[in-house]
Image 1 (cartoon, rainbow, N blue to C red):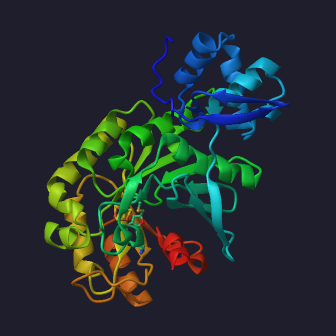
Image 2: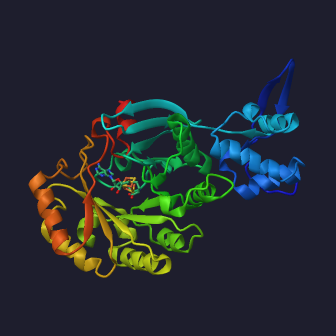
Image 3: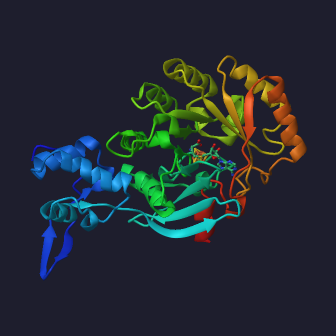
Length: 372
Ligand code: SAH
Ligand code: SF4
């Protein structure tokens, strides 16, 4: 075999074919395949013409057809090969909440029983999907339900793409934007996340422009630097939450590994390489990081970067982080005072009132609730 997909799962598949039962030795994880891997498989392994790879990708990524028996323009032999030797694994839905504002939150279960979430936000004329990149998260940010619940494993590219494609299938139309902002730290699962982005972006696959793809990170410096050089020009969002190391380390232990000086350097590098403005996420927690003085400190720290700030009033998770008192959302007056400081600094911002508050929209909360 010429290809080294490395994706043979060694699964013994029992397939009913008329009266005959066939056993396949291996199954390719179809949603984890890049375009090059599809070509290789189609041409070199299955000895089919190249255009067959395009047709398969069309079925999956344009038409959201996940049953190869319904891929009617493929030859019968190819459909059988696909059925026998590949698996299009879409995630199993185990929960769904629909909020009054139209936001939908999905809870999926992976084959090994991990539970991950996605959110589908329906704005006036465009939709955004927020997907998970890890089952849990190892970074333990104090304000985050996922971080407090711990880490199980990284998701594969196929598991990441499966969330997006299944939501598109349910919606019955294409989703305009994807944000890697669900459970997990995308840049700690860099290989699979970047692979899923290549698939989303590829003209013969999902054909989604880089400007419609946002990676949110807690500040994994090497990952940000790699993203700056990545062939797909995606948008970068950095979860800052505090403008000095002492406070940031208290909220986000990852700050010990990548302190602010290194993080801000990486952001400047990204801006210089890509010409793109970086977004900063700032979750406002009462009495913790909502002092307007901290906005001025942030202004000085990020001077010249021209960031756009998403101010996110803290969404209570129901857990009290160890060694801390209960975290609370600031009053409207405190939120206003913080934002007034940003205005004074001429920093552009928006207050992101999280959609779907009534369905527990903050990261990791639905999974936590349904476990109880
Ligand atoms: N790990 C990545 C992406 C997932 S978290 C990151 O940290 O950026 C996505 C965003 O949700 C982060 O900005 C995070 O700070 C925010 N978030 C997590 N829990 C929250 C909560 N309870 N209230 C408000 N925002 C929260
Ligand atoms: Fe992980 Fe992001 Fe939650 Fe922090 S905020 S624990 S990095 S998912």
